[in-house]
Amino acid sequence: MKNRKLLYISLFFSLSIYLTGCFPASRTEEDTEEKTETTEEKKENEENKEVTDVGEANGAAIMKIAASEQNKKWYSPSVDSTYLYWLNNQLIVLNGSTKCNIFALNVLYKSGFKTPKQNALCRDLHNTDNFSDILPVVGIKDISDAQKGDLIIWNGHVIIFEEKVQSKKDVYVKAWWAGTRQKDNGDNIRNNVIYGKYKISGDYVVRRPIKK
Image (cartoon, rainbow, N blue to C red):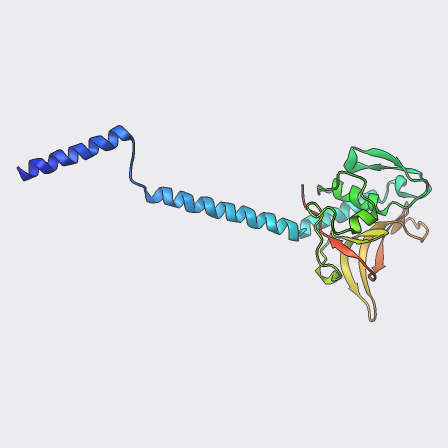
């Protein structure tokens, strides 16, 4: 009698499960939840790293694009107009002005990095209240924190950082920029775009590009 009662209870329990579709939580489901959390944490870590790390490969890509852009005649002060790649190739007339900000942002755009939705002048880029979501400021007044591809910006000038060069007294960096007092030499200076050493001093900020 006792065995028959246990059998009825077992059958009733099995029937209840079948009709409701409910099953006890399995270890597999717990594993899935844990894996989802791990994936989300990994994604968050990667996003944080993206903000703080240009990456050697991306930095090298920026350098390569900068070298290619040096061949464009519209960076020369003798050409009144130039193109803003990041604003749908907008043509802008500058009447002989140097174009360091345009060169820098054109290079970032062609390299696949985020750029402002406007023609950002050097003073706009220098203002730390601007563009923190696409060009976060890092290592202010500490050039040792700069990475290849970073922008070093003064109120009236911007260069693309490659590496730090320490001298006995002063600190220099190797960099790319448009706007130099030196004449074109067909080598490291073409169309007023130069690849060379630049002395680091004064009130500057360092901005780190973020991939699109």
